[in-house]
Image (cartoon, rainbow, N blue to C red; front, side, top):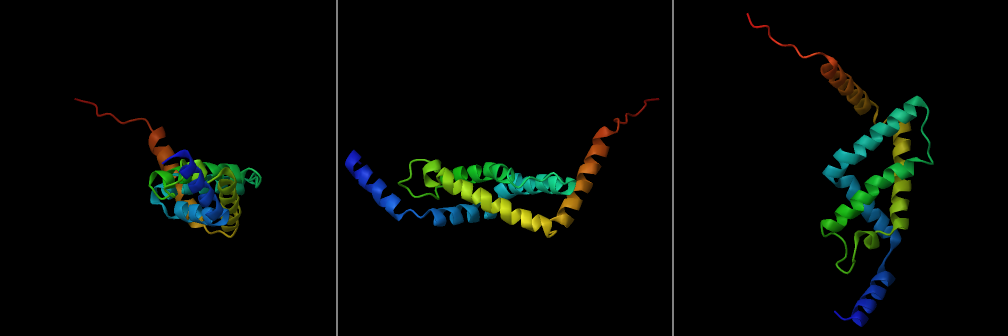
Length: 147
């Protein structure tokens, strides 16, 4: 494709580009991807629950934490071939402003859910697992004494 055709395609794509749609699409994608959910979403919830319970939760810092997940989701979305084929890179498919909006939305929504106790049972289970793991690894290994 020559440079003129690329420029025209880029202009047409930008004219059709809806940042609100892109934010909703990215948010839906990250909320429904099992790997992202297990590897980042729930660990972020655990971190924020710990901060909330200690009384040190800072709502101005939460979007920054969520941004790590949002950036990874945008990259994964692009790598999975979900982005428009004319998009050259993942950060063009989801510009920083769009990703920041998603991170802000997640921070607000998830903090409300934390305050409402949505994750309390899960968190208690995680604390029990952590305690069990600490106890298991802190005990000296038992060796058999040969006679």
